[in-house]
Image 1: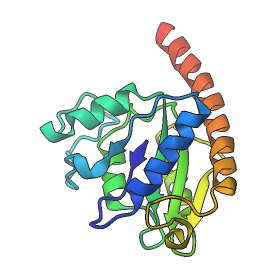
Image 2 (image 1 turned 90 degrees about the vertical axis):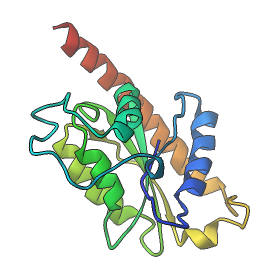
Image 3 (image 1 turned 180 degrees about the horizontal axis):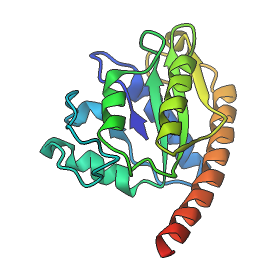
Image 4 (image 1 turned 135 degrees about the vertical axis):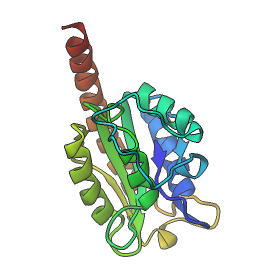
Length: 189
């Protein structure tokens, strides 16, 4: 799971904690929460893109992020809407990598004021499509998240979001299994 916001006072860790509980309850995945606030993510990219040089030298502070992305079989992106799109920190993490996304399944959890993160999710679908990743149809959305969670970070009405999370995780599991098998077959060929 990737927490995409690095903004001071961000709400992403609260949403990620809730989603981690849903993943654990689902039981199909081991959760590794990657907080981009803990990674070195320069916005200046190298002259040769990772698509052309997957083993490129990355900043030393990015090595843990790269290793964890390599090891993941699927991803859940937790993202807010920033100006009708997703945070620059998330775009930097995506652009510094290439093979890490290839033929892997991706699910989304969005949160924001009015849109619930859906605008960021739709923008991310285009980006991940270019990287040959498969984004699952279902997602979890928290419009006006500040009204939905209490002061302790608990959902006031968790039933509907829990159903949405389970449905998204079911799709993510199916695609993760299919794509893991396909990647293994490709590697064996």
